[in-house]
Amino acid sequence: MNVPRPPAEVSLLLERNSEGRGVAVRLAWQSLLGTPPSRIAVTFDGRPLDVRNPSRIRLPEFTSDSIHLISAEVEFSPAVVSRAGLVLGAHSESEASSELTGVPVRLSSGMKVPPLASAGWFRKGKEPLHVVAVEKGPALVLIVRDTNHAEALAKLGKSGRTIFVPGEGGSLPRYDPDATRFENRLDDADRVRFLWPRANPAAGSEMPTELFDASRDFTGNFAGIHWLLTHVSHPIPKAPGERFADAVAIAGLQASSGYTRRAVVLVLGRETDDASRYPPNLVRSYLAKVRVPLFVWSLEPRTADRVSATWGEAEDVSSYPKLKIAFDRLKRELDSQQMVWLEGRHLPQEIALSPEARGIELVR
Image (cartoon, rainbow, N blue to C red; front, top):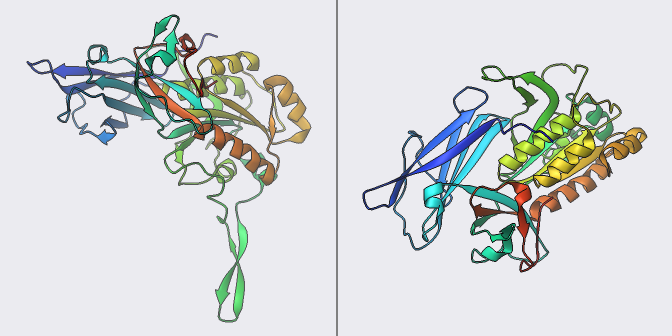
């Protein structure tokens, strides 16, 4: 599958003093949007650094006998975010190369994160890969859905509920339009992003490029999945030629390049026509290779068989109770994931587990 490169790429370059010690990093980037970043965040072992001058970000004092992780996240738009990592200390080779690869793993119940010394757990061919760091971090869920929320609202109902408020004459009924807003939600720092099945030429790009429209990111403490599905729409009215499969492929690319715990959710309803260039079976295979779990939800029982025939197993979410069951499965998947940072730059499909690995599997 000929999927384009990520729409933005970021790198961290280490600056050393006369003694060869790392004292600062330079953040460099390129983006197909041709616009400067809207947000830059760089951390040292999880602590934020001053990024007012991205060309020279000073590092705090650190000891070289232990491993330290520098992580950068650069946002160009709600749909274009890129991350990079650099490891220092413990005589790490990546002090020179500044190349790291994040790979999501799934832990068995009760299993702890793999120790940093377990370099033999991960391999590229016959070559063992060095584990630099392990982190839980926030999750990213990308939802591909019809550009209008009307069908989801009709099937799943409003988020309001009548509640009874104590008063002088007893309990009085009152309608709260957002009573269930925070039900079925992700953790506070986790993010949900809608990627719409509508592409537009990228303005300012030096080469012909299409970018799929996206919503802003909604954190778990903003609202739950039911509220988002029944409230969030594309601001422009729906148009013919929606490309669901292509949007799922781009969602998988964004999830993979974000180096976070992740999943893509495709929500389909009564209309299943798809003007995509890529067939669904090829898109599913691509997401598996870049290690992004795909969940397919169906709002319309009458088209569920058609959706399953096209996409494989589809979960019925045509009612609130059924949506809750599907969400719980999604949440369990995200909770089971950890991000393992490996030294070097590797393609997701090149990384494998060795026979020594126990209680762990690569996310697919």
